Image 1: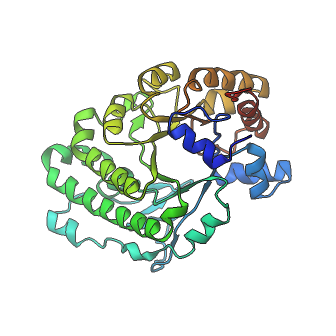
Image 2: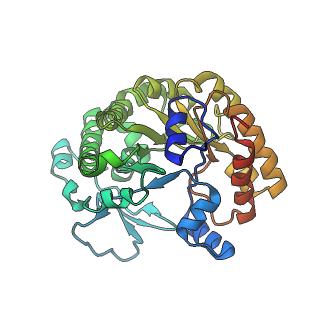
Length: 350
């Protein structure tokens, strides 16, 4: 008898072999709208067409509305105005030269601004059939970069570590309380606490193991412990090449790593599966750029099968694109080919 999506995903997290490899579909809004137009499907039917085993629930912002300044296209909850495509780039770094007192006096947001009242009903509509993702995204590394400036943040890790600690503490205090409110309201119908921080670049980690352990790991561990306190699996989205950091993440109790990019340094699927496949769930590894964007349906099928052959044995794998935000320029037929291949060749017990 086929498993439900939820059963399939939880088996993979437990490193058991489910009926088939679970499938993950993350998408940019632009690709999603293009796919709906081309396939003439609504949101729910498109997810079913792709075979996505996950669904996500969100808190909604209900705090004060602050008008954007001229030239700004987006504003974060921490007051950073940004300009450009998507979320853009920050127009200023308000804590770049702040004293410790000014950091503490900054206009930090109130976690109560996030409305959690509808989350349980949103999750219950799936009737336990899908693995439900919840919790705040919690990108504290990126927010610290916005507030301090990236180069300045690196320098202050050596010259003013107390400033860095204070900024990150405020950020994670906010995110942890928002997620706790979410889990208090709906933790019994959420399966996976899904958080995101991109600690890797194309050629390796954006900060070395010593700095990661000193400044980032305690806060990653805090969020992991929060999810575990509610009986949830915790999955981290992390782009780029960050293999040297993975052992510390595992030691901190992380359950899953998402959107693995095989074309980045140290992220070869063979190596990841051999070194970490029995210790942490691996999610992604089907190359978004060279396979999904640049390929044909035939080459996508070939590339997807190769990844499945490497990553499937023993469970502990979720199949999906190496970049969660499938971009608009990705051909819809290639994405269909990926998911059709997962469905056909991802069977454990044919």
